[in-house]
Amino acid sequence: MQDRDRINLGASLGVAVREFSVTTGATAYMLYVHRKAWGVLEAKPEGVTLTGFGEQSGKYLGALKPDIPSWGTNLIFEYESTGPGSRHARSVAACATH
Image 1: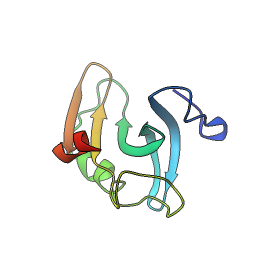
Image 2: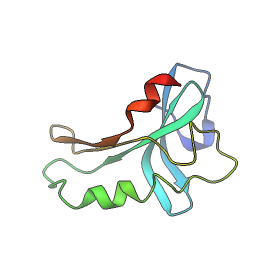
Image 3: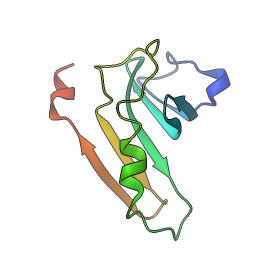
Image 4: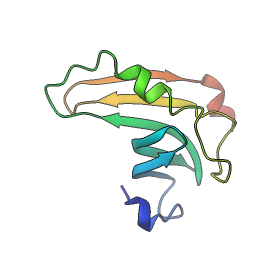
């Protein structure tokens, strides 16, 4: 877990960056794997229903700024969570081949 103003993508195989800006806003967390943007995690307070937040996290999938290293044109993973309630929204199986 890292703050956006102090990113060290080499700290671990996987890194989550808080409040990461993309062209359509700021996602709760940008997820990196092997120093490349891989997906987003949208976090909401406990007790909030996750229905409807798929659209919010989904709009971030194709909204990377051009200078962000990634596994492709669009991010390949999105996840929504309230802590105890989580919902894996979508992923691309091809990510395992990268």
